[in-house]
Image (cartoon, rainbow, N blue to C red; front, side, top):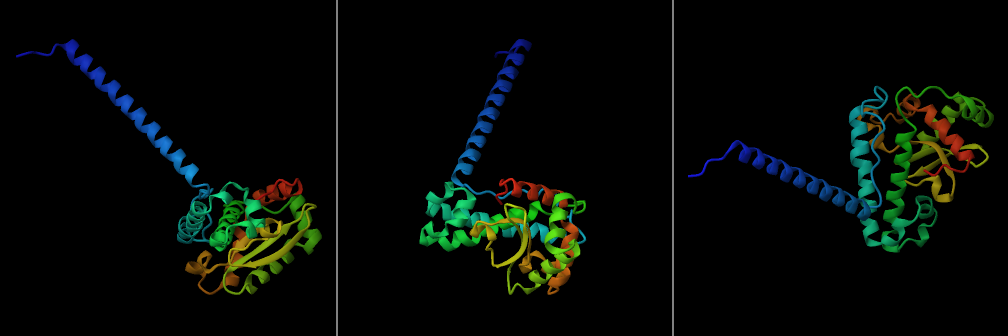
Amino acid sequence: MSFLTRRDIIAAASAASAFAATTHLASAQTNQASAQSQTAAEPFSLPPLPYATDALEPHIDAQTMELHHDKHHAAYVNNLNAAAKEAPEFATWPVEKILTSLDEIPEKVRLTVRNNLGGHVNHTMFWQVMGPSGGEAEGAVLSAIVRDFGSLEKLQNEFNSAGARVFGSGWVFLTVSNDGKLAIESRGNQDTPLMEGKRVLFGNDVWEHSYYLKYQNRRPEYLNAWWKTINWRAVSDRYARAKQGKLVI
C-alpha cells in the first residue's frame, strides 16, 4: 500500500490546476473561433439598444421596446442573413449600395432583401435618434428647422400629420440633403429614402407593433408623445455628419 506525501499532493494539485487552466483557455479559444465563424457566416447583426428597455417610459413602454427590438428587429436581421446564404454575393456590399441597387440583387431574394434590409436600417436609425434626457433642439439643426419649416412646432405638426396619413404600416422621415435642407417624406412598409440615395436625419415608425400595446388605435397620440423621446444631441450629430457627407444609415 502506498502513501501520498505532502509533496505528492502539492504536485498533483498543481498539475490539476494547470490542466484546468489549459482546458479553460482551449475552451475560450474554441468559443472565440466559433463566434468569429458565426460572424463571418452572418454578415448582418442586431445592434444592442443603447439604453434600457424602460428608459423611454412613460412615452414608450418597456414591453413594447423589448418586443420591438428583440423580436421584430431581430427577425429582419435573421431573414436578411438567410437571404445572404442564398445569394452571398450581395452580402459584402455596403448597405447604401444594396439599397440603391436592388435591381441587381438576385430575383429569388430581392423582395426579402428590400423588406428586411429596409427594416434593419430603419430600426438601427430609430434606436439611435431616441434616448432618455435627449436635451433640446439647438444650434445648426434648430436653425435648419426654423429655416425650412418656420419653427420646431410647425415641423412637429407637419411630421405628425404625415405620419398619421400613412395607410397601414410604414414610416415618416425627416430627410436631409448634402447642403442641409430638410424635408418630410413618408414610406410604406419598410421602404426608406436611402433607396433613392437620400439621407435620413430621423424617422418615426408607425407600424402598429411600435405603439399598439400602449396606444391601441390612437396613432396621433403616439406621434405626439414620440417627440419626448428624441435624443437631440444624436440628431445634431447626424445633421453635422450629413453636411460632411459622412451620414450613412
